[in-house]
Length: 147
Image (cartoon, rainbow, N blue to C red):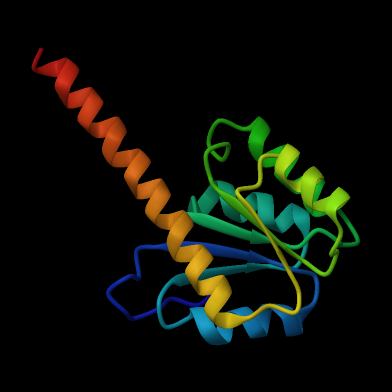
């Protein structure tokens, strides 16, 4: 686990990949902006998602113990992790798997090799959508309280 010292330290991202080199690449260009957690397998990913409640999960699909599809299915079953947005980051570059990723309720599907500026933009975009949804929910709640 690496804790960032930047002002966005409260934004937590869980990075899941069985290849240490892939986790290192992601760490190198995200660690200055976010608090990062790392899992090298699906079971650890589920455990960390439950205990740390990340704002976003970057999840590989091809892993030996549990595929990314199995991980997201487990996350979506649990009330405590169902709302965490998941972006698949994978070497699988075909329309069938991309479609399947969205059917499993991933919010995005990024193929490797990753491009730092693209993945940073997509992360920022999805985090903005989450904050917007939270603000809308809060406003609806406050409107009903004062109505």
